Image (cartoon, rainbow, N blue to C red):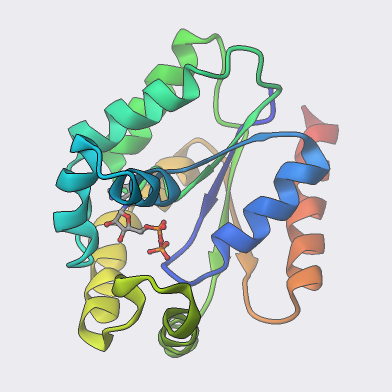
Length: 194
Ligand code: ADP
């Protein structure tokens, strides 16, 4: 299985690149942010809970997020591989993901991490907020909160995959196609070496 963690701060382009990777490599796309937003829209119990956190730019608690990720992944018994987008966002989530994949006799192939400077992130998120309707993209304070939480709680997950020799940083600034090419190059070389 080809299991990719697509990583990076909010606004780094994970969603855009995930969509392209999914069709090229025939993977199942699991985005925790998309799952939460769909539940908020559908006014489910999970949605009601998640909304409190998303609106403030805070992380949904690990036990909730891990549970939902596992139950979504479990729907895809025949998946050739997964692309995890927006998950894991804490070391606890990374550990849980390893455990879950091990229970399927599988493992993470690599973490691809999109590097984008903070100033560029702030610009992109405010721009996205204009037409996405996402409330968390419209308020500079909430955007800053998400970036700060990324540095504090999420970025340490890079170390988790570095220790496993699975961490690959990618320049996330520039042309969408060029960034996609860099991602594909890393994936292809990992596949050749495995
Ligand atoms: P972005 O990367 O642009 O912030 P996402 O769609 O990945 O967008 O996430 C939106 C929000 O959903 C986050 O700010 C957070 O509140 C919640 N969320 C998504 N994934 C996770 C996760 N793995 N753990 C906790 N909260 C999450």
